[in-house]
Length: 438
Image (cartoon, rainbow, N blue to C red; front, side):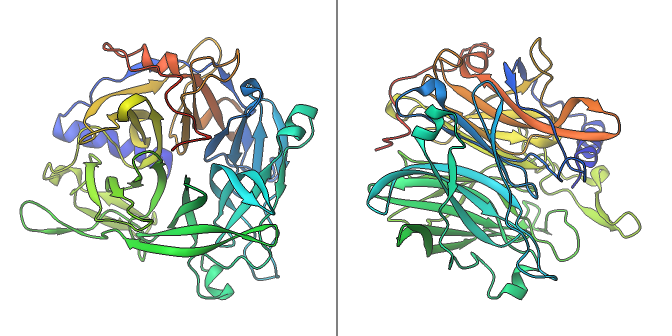
């Protein structure tokens, strides 16, 4: 669904119900990446999802790695400058789809060819693969391009049974990576489906492959309190997909944002999915809808909303991130794309909702709209971000370049988020090390 359609639907819902969204607090980004443009002149670059790699010796040289869909992958320094661009793979044949990079995450210390190697892992929506890129700290220090493709040549499609099925594009979509003892895993969702798959990474002669460990199918329809059956608003043939995901590495919990439904919590026990629990719903949950064939989009019937939706997320529910603090404390963040805010939940217990924030126009950057992916780290990253860093996708980078719609990423110091709340959030830079989550 387009960003403009999402905003219109959210506004309509508020007018009909009279329900006002909780007032978010405002925070301000400190750094932004160069805007990219999804047109021929811009190389069809469309920013989507970031990950943060923490440099083991010099945290101030840490990287932000970000997907650009058809244009591949960008690597940025903490000042926002682009250090490297990696192209998505070309189409393997005339009628085949090219690579298209959707989501990215980082694992540390994967043993590859006998050496501990940090990896950036990417969901290639175009070719239905997980791509792996080794991150070289020495190259970072020397100012050389730091990422190198180490994907196994025989890496199989994540979901598709054949290359022909790959070209139907019900392919790898969202992605979250994590480590457990000496093993590394990725959770991958499927585009236009409710399926989520757990893969274990494997060293295949110095290249990164993977094997399936478990598969979970989230619901595609829901029984409402009034006994009626409801399916989320979607184009014909599409089911309510998941994109934004994160794994709490200490608690072994997956959080998955099903875009038109809400936020799921799924425990991981011995690398298997346990029973999913829907911990929050989007405001549009349960609203009847119809399909406008002329406009080729579904339309919510907000006048007949039965009021079963949540209060904190406006569809789409998107990027999720975990801020770690001591003794199981900390926060789960989720992008409420429909109203340009981010919901904050407790990491522990029943994930109680604490409030929302918006990244708004400030002295250094413009604000954030229609955000997809996000990433947060608690550790100090040199002088630039001594209290930790939040990176958010911005689906509407300004100022615009004529009629070209730009996207980019915003970097916000965690203290800006924490101190904006009436009861400040925790700032804990010492209790969790993303390089040693156990």
